[in-house]
Length: 216
Image (cartoon, rainbow, N blue to C red; front, side):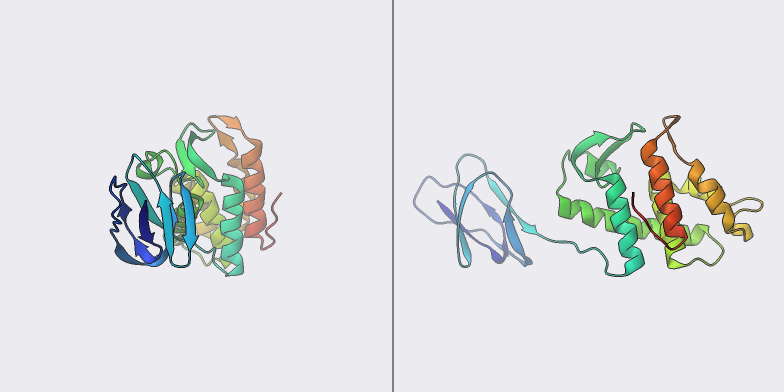
């Protein structure tokens, strides 16, 4: 039997054949989540854990909040809706190894599985990076909703396609805002085939661009 503190501590606890109680802790400002199928009895500030065989890794349980700003909230919830949460590695319709909420980072995908809180954290971080790239690529003023619509598009289709969408004669960067409404819906192919899911996503992004985000 081992005892590991759960309020403000995290550590590695190992099964011991003797009756000694062992605790290895490192201070962290978080609640502890036990990540294993084990029997746990919680009493106030301690967890009494019955465990044998392998070392037990105790990890902090962190919740990542979706932004409260309405327009950004619409972006995150919309991307989550269309990506869907997949805890295990899979290949998207384009054949790209993916995990979580559309994460294609090889370092993350190679782990084989991911928790929903971590997938949310990764999504928020990636959307922030993509939004910054969109700001750099677009040379005209955008509303928050227009910026978020293009961020979702770039997150899904990549910056190369985003630049094709906004650059060129009589396109967005030339001052033609309505060109987005004309050309954005055309990006509905994956592996050379039209996809209903992409058609719905483009329609949602267009509604976000127009300031009236509507999920199907």
